Amino acid sequence: MKRTVFEDEHEALRESTRQYIERELVPNAEKWEEQRMVDRSAFLAAGKYGLIGFNMPEEFGGGGSDDFRFNAVIDEELARYGGPAPSLSLQNDVVAPYFKHLANDEQKARWMPGIASGELILAVAMTEPGAGSDLAGIRTSAVRDGDDWIINGSKTFISSGINCDLVVVVCRTNPEAGHKGFTLLVVERGMAGFERGRKLDKMGLHAQDTSELHFENVRVPSANILGKEGGGFYHLMQNLPSERLGIAISAIAGARESWRQTLQYAKDRKAFGQSIGNFQHNRFLLAEMDTELDVCERYIDRCLQGVVDGDLSAVEAAKAKWFCTETAKKVIDGCVQLHGGYGYMMEYRVARDYCDSRIQTIFGGTTEIMKDIIGRDLGL
Image (tube, rainbow, N blue to C red; front, side, top):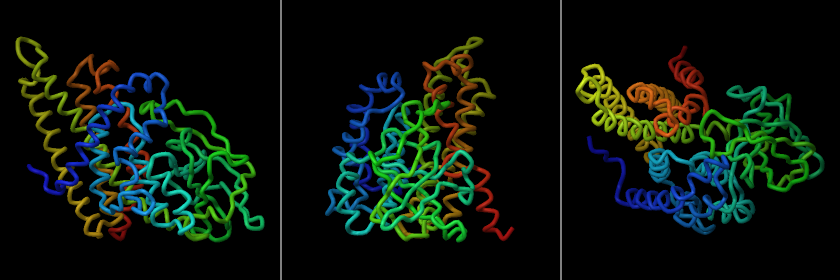
């Protein structure tokens, strides 16, 4: 079924993304996998190819686009590549919108040129050792001291935590105000008391740095408040639908490539005198996977059109996130099974996909949280 959500300009960016992958990522893949972290140069190269900053204002060096389909193209191509890569989805889909929609004129002039060029790498620090999906459990505090704020606390599972230059830190600024007691403060590289902890040893996505962050009496000027004081919780909620859609897009695009390679493997691999794909069970399994991926792709395209039309709801994004990531997990698990013993070998992409994709039902809000959002919308 032909996809109709993308136009010529999106396909042009798709070609640029493929060139970036071939020229900038593939030659460095082995090195980055060994050192377990992508070099900062990958972000700068992405900026030169127009893969970062396309959604930033033109006056600050960006592309001036507000079309999430460009984000989708980049997410899809990086997922299809499946190798070590910079976390462009975090940069473009998750954190950059905070700066685009919440930064004042002075902040835009100060930060946006570096964001658009890839010189400034972004991160958002929400999760804590004792608070994951439950944002109300956040304990990192920021206390006013004159015109400054003093931050104390720790965050964990922070994507781009080692490489980042600007961190949007979710802080509790008024313990008595409930959801109105959170504020977003931008902590910059080099601020006294801001320390990066260990680079976490993850099950997958080894080349994408994820770390602990520690804040000990970090003095942050009021000029680094992003959005409204006390409005942090609501700012986070406004941006979560696009983050969750981006995760769904990457999940299905990556699973589709795993399925495609498995289909070819099933045609080539012989057992009992015939290709393993010719056995009815395997043929049915591959047919089921293809159908499930098609259904997910159609829903994703409808959600993308919803973003373009300005009517994608948080509930619709939650449906995309949980169903597409769970489908991807199921498909890739089936692909491993069809590979037999070779599916357990890390030299095969399907084994790496199995490890890399497992986090998708967890980050950005777990499957259980997504279902709870949908269920509450049903009045339950």
